[in-house]
Length: 312
Image (cartoon, rainbow, N blue to C red):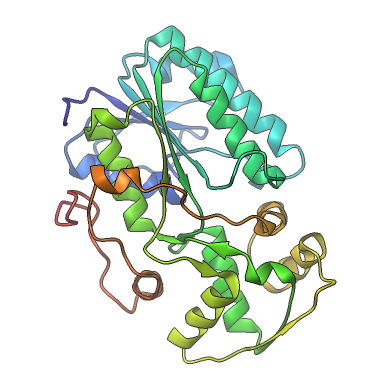
């Protein structure tokens, strides 16, 4: 069920997901406004720029004025300690501004994880943001994703660096935690699809790739695609908290991001329902193909229409 769309706001427009989504929206002919903290931030041609900061509520009025649907793609982990408070305040400020402006829909990309099952601070914060957005007088669509495979994704960059730099790995118990990784192009397809399908309004959906893998499986398969075969030695006493500092030492990922991400690896992050597959039944990208695309050794798939043949 497709609906005509009005002007679309993208928060987090210069980020890993936001930048790709903005280009795809423009290619599909949508009117796009981007909320950016820095007035000189680089954006694609054809988009409207709105300078503002979600932590400064007085800057948000112009950004949300006249908006039909907003994408909420921001998080504060890169700012270090206290990211949960910043995420909470940002979501509250945005919700209040969107309500005043009469925004009709919000589409939020958050994290997978069973609520109430001892979630890490990172995943609990993602769920709290969803609850704050869901309390607004607009319809919120919450897409819950696990590891996203694509250059620029912190989880992807961590795995890539471990494979490239360590022929021998002393690994903690969390390498056996299950995950359902998804290709970045498939995430963009889902985000675009939610905009065009009113049936997704006000709903929560799990999104993931076609395979459930342990982190050990992902590392091994990533390594095989690069012609490597690292030796992995499990050490039961290496906790997520301790191993996060090991990851910081050997990967280029910002410690402020790496530490909460690794601490969250204790939680299984797999899809518990597949309702969105009935609404958007496009072929999902296999893990190996997603890695090849990220490494530049395979042609990228094309976000757009459900069968992947639309514009990028």
